[in-house]
Image (cartoon, rainbow, N blue to C red; front, side, top):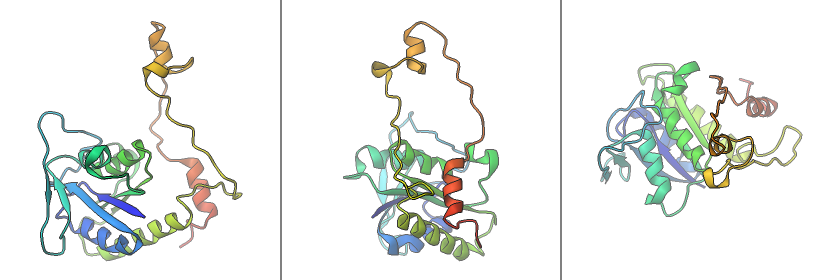
Length: 217
């Protein structure tokens, strides 16, 4: 199991170190995080300048990699050539401050995990409500337990009835457009209008998690 870890508070953040230490027993860990704090960066990519990757040598962060870019930059670069192969899981955090409700649209922490999903790799984002780090070990323990449970359940790849489930792939690019897609509408010279909503909760996954006992203390 190869786990890629990033965050948006920067590679020096105590939450990142706590998360790394918590999940190290679960597999191979690669850390690629922003050089500076990028809270609120959402899914932004750096397109106006080149990016550099540096490695920490020595100390408790020995081997950590950091990039002078955003959380999404970190995961994107990892997925598009820096790593020899895709990781099995992307996790991000532990963020200082909660990411709830509409905050997830702006969160760089969530964006790093989402970038992994964009490349077909499951992603998990962790944050804590407390703005200080006094309870970071509790948050790290919870993160460890969640990742371990996800690995045991194969990232919830079965239905609550134990049936195998299948994922339908992306619609593809404009060359492979089919009727009913945005691409097809545009190819036909029409305006494509897609209704959207802000509810990002994966309700099917939530039901599966509850059936596995995740709602118990």
